[in-house]
Image: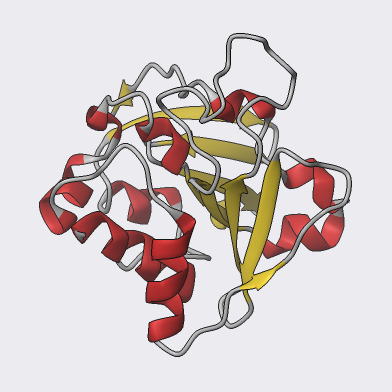
Amino acid sequence: MPDLDLYVHFATRGEVLGAGFDTNPAEWEAKPEPDYLDDRAQDLMRRDYGLVELSFQADEGTWHCFGINVQVHRLSGGDLSTVPVPLRNQYGEFTPRVKFDELAALITSLGYRIEPDNDATTTNIRRYQVPESGVRVFIVADVDPCGYADVGAEGPAEHRVGDVCSIVLSPARWSARGLSEDLPPQRCRNSRSQKSHSTK
């Protein structure tokens, strides 16, 4: 599946279309597309391209990327326009859901490891790490963490146990704070980001 190629490449290399850590916002603008939402707070900025979210920090007036989040769960509603055009051009069709078993098999077939990296404070999400790249993969473990009665045994149509929720590279965040603070919010089980785009 072409979309799996993106997820495998990011999980093992930590980059999207050749851009990774220490790139500045202008360099990223040339990669996904010029349509995005910026959320700034003092010397921190979150840039939302839809499927891909970036975190930047200003250092002496220059913005540097310190976090990349591929928000796979945002495709679960079926709106594939969330995928930036350059990624669609590069990888072709994207599916609404990605199974962890398929992703893990491709990662290990390339000689990389993928190991459990769980946090005992949460039960609705399981976390795995690719040690060679530092990338974390978040997996849906419980489609009904809040105990809603309207969720069937197999979960809502957009999510299943074992689906990939997100793939994240942000080692500075994990080393600087509690791991549980970096888990995807429970809303990822049944919603996708509502974002308004800003165009340069």
